[in-house]
Length: 627
Image 1 (cartoon, rainbow, N blue to C red):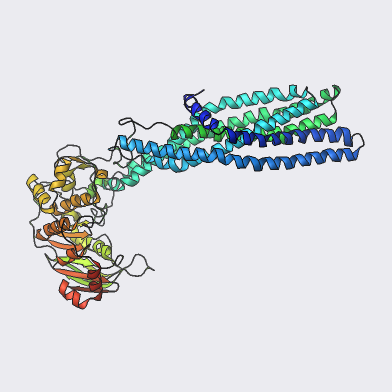
Image 2: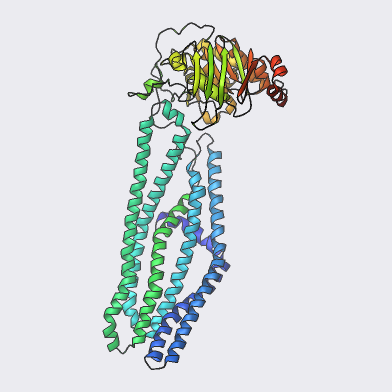
């Protein structure tokens, strides 16, 4: 008996004892199945010996009618058994779901710093249903085999006791051979489920850290590790299939060999004064009752039984104590860490969006990190200037040849150093506009110009020096606060500059709580507003003279938003803000209202007078007071 069986057996017995009434009900209905099996072979023997061979056709037909009645009894058995089955299966599933949820909550409470266990999703959905279905099938099959075998063996004894000498030895040998395969199959089943959970956890970690993977140039390494895990699961499935083949050998010994021995022994049996009806009845018991029941039992125990044992072991395992469990998903993949310029280890250095750090044409061969992570040189940063002039000349953009244009014939000029706010209904194209200005999207027609050049040419091979885009979903990577703030500074920055930026955007209280600039950050432990503050500090510290904020303050309260936007307004350069609140729009020099195919530009007062959409938006925005 395996350690898993030893651990699970007492709980299984308690579970079954608590449902004794259900088991008795199912056993009572199953007695009809024994009667059905007994009458099936016995009626055939009597119909042949006492009926047709004796010249009494009516007697033979009567015994065949008895066999037909036995078939009806078998149908009634199935109906009653399935009624009782729900009383066993559904309580098991409910108990397993409670156990999985309780274990996940216990582990989360015991070790809040540990990342979430993504494999719990597989346990809560796939594995609990797997256990439920396997248990239901196992109960049905085991019950059917026991009562079918009892009916068949009783029938063989009633026909001729010497028939047991032919049937029992291979039957017992095949069953013993089958039982010998159960433990190895359980091991292989456990290995397969472990490989499946590992693969699921790996995919969850990769999905959570996809920006880290792309920004750190770790795509090939992560893909290779994923392929290795897929190959491991394939090997586990192949080994499991090998033991399933051994089950077929056991079935042949237990089910097919008795039939062969009976046929070979027929002359001897007839010499021992067995009747032809008795031999045919025995053959009926073997081929119509024992062999199908045995085949179903071995298939169920060989696959469903071992699978049930393994799944129950994983679902009912005690919660892991802090320090024992494996690291959960959500952190950067192994090997995807970079080093700072001073040689100290650092977290992965992702971009706000992996595409934002890449200029067109930067996807050639060579080290992918070189295209996205420019080394911090000692060259002085360019002197700040008023900012670039941004111009859109009759720009039209659509997300596909047959799609309706998101922006149509848009003409706009943003002067150097100007602060422009963009407002409009959701889905009208505000984020698309920032993508065009950042060089991430290309217009279907018209031109985008930054200081008279297309974005790709204007930004060159290092776009982070000239423009920065902060999307609504701010990104913070695992590393220190200093690493996060310096990421868009190719030439680095002094501690004084870091402190000045932190004070300007309102990062001070957050940094104090985290433990200072050199404290390591767990992104999952930060709120969305805190992540936005760090991203805003990163953008404020960067040398880029063009800043694009795409609802980058939507998770801040009005007071924090005002402070952050004022910091960018005081910062040299051109500022374009997708406004989240009316107060944000009113702080801008001008406001662009996107309204489908029309666009209107003006001050707050001018737009209230000339733009019905802006009046509607301003009315829907509730007045806000700083907190």
